[in-house]
Length: 135
Image (cartoon, rainbow, N blue to C red; front, side, top):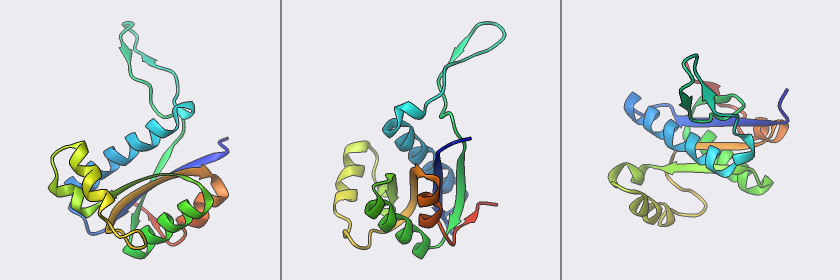
């Protein structure tokens, strides 16, 4: 039904609150980068309007560091839409500080705790190979 796939990979040993936090940030990154993937606004039976949601499923995977690094590397090699969250971002309190610590990460081995990617299904599947759906 969809030509593209969205996958969010989370470091498996994060505390639950961090997994939820990282998932929320990464999902907004994908939605912001792919406005064409957004569905229509929701309206309830009383006529109240709600925000648009992404018009396709996002699958969430439990990952090991090697899975995150692989997805990161392949997303760059294949031009996939990518949102990333590094461990140092947990110690900041706002977006500008997040960008500063993100930029300070080593290019070839950032301390990733989560990554979201969107692109052609087959390419995303290759990038997330080895990761398991989050329980």
